[in-house]
Image (cartoon, rainbow, N blue to C red; front, side):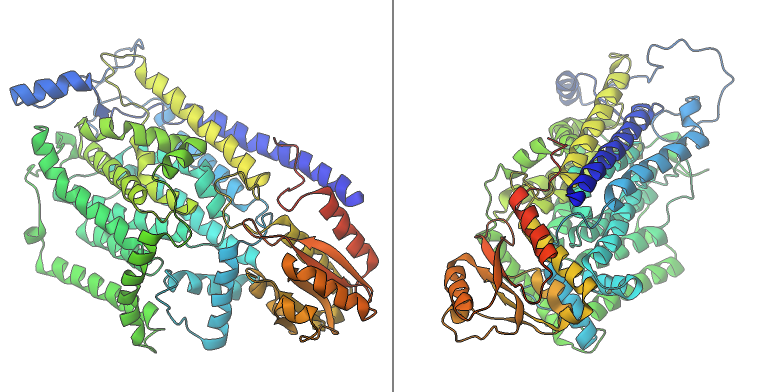
Amino acid sequence: MSRIDSGKRRSSLYAGTTKVIVGLVAVVVVKVELEGGVALEFSDMSDTLTESMKNGTNFPQATAKDSGRVSRARPPKKSRTGTDAGRDPGPLDSPVWKSVELWACLFVAASFRYFELGLKPPHFDEGINGHFVMQLWQVGRHDYDPTNFHGPLYFYLLHFAEVIGGRGVEVFRFMNAGLAMLLVISLRGLHREVGVAGRWAGWALAVSPAFVFYGRYAIHETLFILGQVFYWKGRLQWRLWSQNFVPESGPGMSPRHATMWMVLGAWIMICTKETFFIFMGTVLIAELMWSPMLKLLRQSPGLIEGGLKAGASPKALSWRHLSAEQKSELGGLLILGVMAWAAMFTGFFTDWSGLGKFFEAFNVWSKTGQSGSGHEKPWWYWLAALFDYEWPMLVGLVLSPWIVLARSKSPQADLLRLSVLIGFGHWLAYTLIPYKTPWLIMNFWPLLLAWPPHFLNSTRFPKAPRLVLGVASLLILASAIWSARLNFAHFVDRRERYVYVQTSMDYRRMMTALEELVKRHPQRRSDAIVVAIKDPWPLPYELSLFPRMRYAFGAEIGDGRHKVDDASLILLDVKDAAAAELKLRQSGREIRVLRFQIRDAYDAGVAIVDMSLWDADLVDRWDEELRRWGPFETGREWWP
């Protein structure tokens, strides 16, 4: 009972910690970006679009005014680039405030991603990833399998994590949480390319239920999305360089840095998941339709005087404006990227058949994507998921037509609109594909850029910017609360859409008891463990440290063909449990039979324990926890 009492005390600590984190989100987010400039303007979209099409003019330009505030005369300021040129910076526009806001965002993101990383039982995919890491230790390279639908890069990163931190799922998760933090930083870093919306998107992603939930798992998706952000950052820098644009802070855009980001991002995506072609295809389609769409809307790319290099003309730059040295540099970066790709898929140039297998994977995946392979979902699945969890992203999806059709006042706003168009394209593509797993919702990240704090015309709606700022802050705060609920209380609840192919708490309780037994009696590690369940993941990785762990068919145990006289623990499917239990009791062994359901969508099984090899108090405590809570109950009833 002392464990239960301590669990209640920990629950109170968790509740208090969550309140502190959520309170910090409330305080900081409500204030953040009050200085955000007017990136896009909507002057009654229906009227202006009609007027523009009739008269052949651009959308009427409104003057960004101070939203109803009494302003005192100030000396003229140096013209600034971006969306509010010449605006006097307020106290929240100061470097000190921006630094505080950045570190607050990172603190909140880290709290969600690192706190109690071992709380959730290992996921099905984490067990498989661990198995591939074991092969890396044995063979020294990853042998690429086109039917696995995952490239080698993530397995090498997990292997590196084991080299640094030791063996275990929590070590994998620590590395993945680091990638998740880098993803938050990278999305915020887009503020140089798309303006203040990048910082808001960083806050939304920091507390997003999906990005937190899957950022706390050791699965491929976080790394894959990081590659997308890197690639798109480079592509945006290319477009800004072509317009001679210089951001407010930092160096100007250069082809070298833009290409480095694109090559790095493409390499990460290609070497992580074969579905990179969906992202690349969506980007290509969006960019091909962008210029015709601007012509249809009688718009031209946003070029403002403050965004041009000194003495430069607004004439667009292109490949032919590069010097021979610059072209040589870019060619070298592309060659380096190809070599890095080949190294990954050939086991560092030891198995050249991996290159052929890489292209073979597309044929395999196209069939899987259409058939669903047991993961088929209806077309409205993503709308339901967005409504259940991702409210900022849902607002972005709803606002995306208005954002895309708005008239831009700067190159940054142009690129924000293009980014939102790509986010909408991702949603549409994954809606049409029958194959749907919940973590794929992370691919809609560009929709987080669709709701900058000021998107209404401040001359017609003087209070609109502050209203939108308040709504956006409430959405982020609500998202943080819902994320805390999902990640720290309902992380194995089968009613939650994100809890998918999830290992149960029965598994965690069994492993806790087994680890305690080995801690008390190290010689018990050499006892035999028999796994006779049909689909054992993640057991193969977790039990691989027990040298006498073996697999069997449950029916063979029941009829005596498979001897288990040396086994201290036997795991069985429910259909084979009765016969095996009868056989063991007839042999005179003292056994205990406990419930063991390995994960959702899987029939309950049993764990048979040889009491001559186990401490009775361990088994009693294990049995008490099973009786107190169900397979998918965490014991954290403090959060409804």
